[in-house]
Image 1 (cartoon, rainbow, N blue to C red):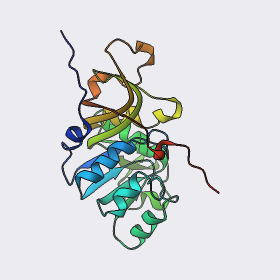
Image 2 (image 1 turned 45 degrees about the horizontal axis):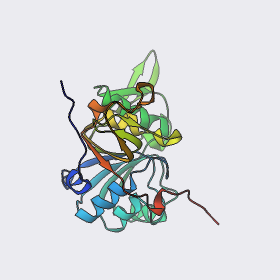
Image 3 (image 1 turned 180 degrees about the vertical axis):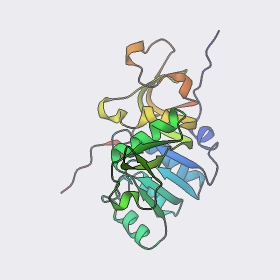
Length: 231
């Protein structure tokens, strides 16, 4: 059986994302964030989006571009403290923000990818993070029911990909990418390098190709992919 070539032009791949979609983004700050795919989403104009990402990036980077143009309706994240615009928009009621402890966000996504409906935990049960969430009594102890997370589309940055969509990530840029690839109905991966099928050693593949629908080649890395320097 011949495996398909999933390489796709960036504009064509992103055009498959409708307005109103729930979109998961890989990335932990800069490492692993698919800045080029975000820029194409911005250019095409999809709006009313729910974004699920570890953070809201910083001013003038990544998610902040979508916020600045009013494209995001809801943000599910672990923190937004590095983005003053996100904080101001939340306080003004311009976006809805759901905060999760970082490990809980990862586990909710993992559960979604594994076909589970929810996880049960005692983490954060006495904090504002779990206010209003369902509770269970287990062994005489109170636990919080955290609903699993899935999405319509996952946008991922990879260091290398083959034409079938097997992905390899560089160091900590791996972060949330393997999890969100499993929890999405469609996965679009941008890659710094695309190699022929078979060129990636099996032990170097972090996300297998069956989880990936489209692979987009990056011709160059913008300044956003660099290391953030603060005065």
